[in-house]
Length: 89
Image (cartoon, rainbow, N blue to C red):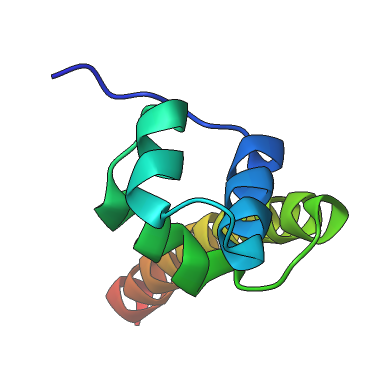
């Protein structure tokens, strides 16, 4: 089955439409082409956020992942330096 990437704008619009209650969630998901499980996962993740807040959230998640990689690399370098120092003694 082909996976599909939805933009934050589409997700936020779906959540706002569902909150209005004009159509059932299943029908809204069918119109967008996603599953109801995806809807509930997005609802848990985004809640009542706006499109700008959702973009900011994604940006912060990317920044966090980048910083975690940097910290991991530095930790490896520190461990390697400690080994070299111990061998010299």
